[in-house]
Amino acid sequence: MPDRDFLFALELSDERRFEAMIGELAGAVLAHVGYEASAIDELRGVMRKALTVGRARSGTRCDVRFHVHSGELQITVACAGAAEWRTTRPLP
Image 1: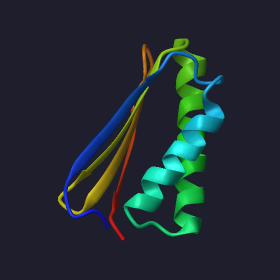
Image 2: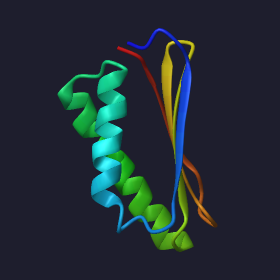
Image 3: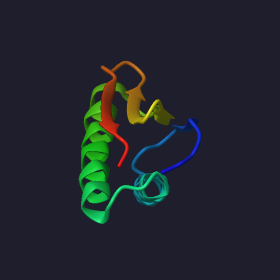
């Protein structure tokens, strides 16, 4: 588990083009904060779905944020013109 709060965010101009990168990136961030492989796979799957749904409703630009604060991880997927998807999980 990280000893400090942090925020990692990125803007994707074309989610389909970066799908593999987002999966790898999410896996690295989730492993860094201490999640086990099964939790990483589950969170990457729901993120992939959120990006797919958001992009289908909005167009191309999506923002992804990983925010660790006060013992929790918050993941946010926001695609321009679509409802924001967010999940919060306790840190392991």
